[in-house]
Image 1 (tube, rainbow, N blue to C red):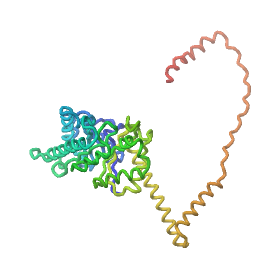
Image 2 (tube, rainbow, N blue to C red):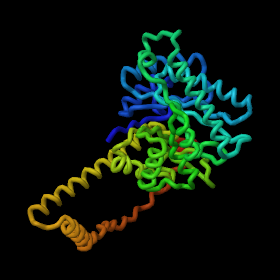
Image 3 (spheres, one colour):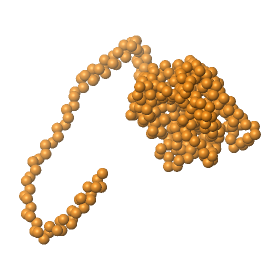
Image 4 (cartoon, rainbow, N blue to C red):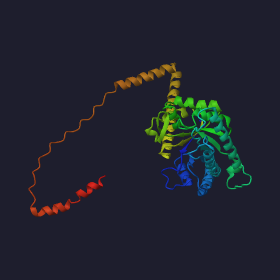
Length: 381
């Protein structure tokens, strides 16, 4: 198995501090290996102080940093809309170099006047080609010397990730993204599984579905490296409405975990948790992958035992497996049903004699003792 890296989209919810460096410390402590810094709206100049600190830590700890560009982008809009979007992306590219980001995830936006088709795809390809060129210029700016940033001098520029969109009116179906990535060197597809699931009306259900998805991308662009987002999703009529925690969605992670362990030995995959639970669902994904590995080991151990026994007894492996299944079935059928233990009947309560009425002189004292009852009613909820 090549490798799976998991991490949250942003600073963990459980992190007491809110800086990227503090978030990285918490992520590493959880046993996760990556994160995606969020610059989905605007980058302020004061953010760059923590960005270079994060870059130094990522380089020393061999921690994979990634970054997400502006959430609202209109690269297919008019000249003003496109210029405004590219200005925000420029700030993200500068931050990506400082933070030592391996991948920069970008959105395209609405189809605008282009509509679906070749014209829109060609325009998107031209824009992303210029973005890739700009990344190279920023990364290899000879006028800047950064002795504390060895990844800038010796490393390779960030890869531009084009994310699949979650709504029909937005450019970014899986097919559109693959077509553009095929034509623009330096770009990769960002497979947002929740978006693919939603646009496909709930299509990602089995490990075979994931096998088809990854095989399609590999055959189309010839890559073993994948960058993916995963979360639960609420969807209607082929559109993602909003992200949910994984357990509250019809998009289950277990089939993807099964595919990664059973058939994904060739994958080099980064999985980012987009869930509202961030690092908690990243840990949930990690646990599911570990469970899938455990099941695989158990199955292989059973197969090894069958082979050894078949060699000793001269029986075929298929016959041994059939006998095991028959014996397991017999054990299930012959197992007596356990009757629930009868609860002991409570002894009839002895009638207590009613106490005589307290003298009137004690009535006031009793009222004082229990006078807090009415106030407590307000505190219960």
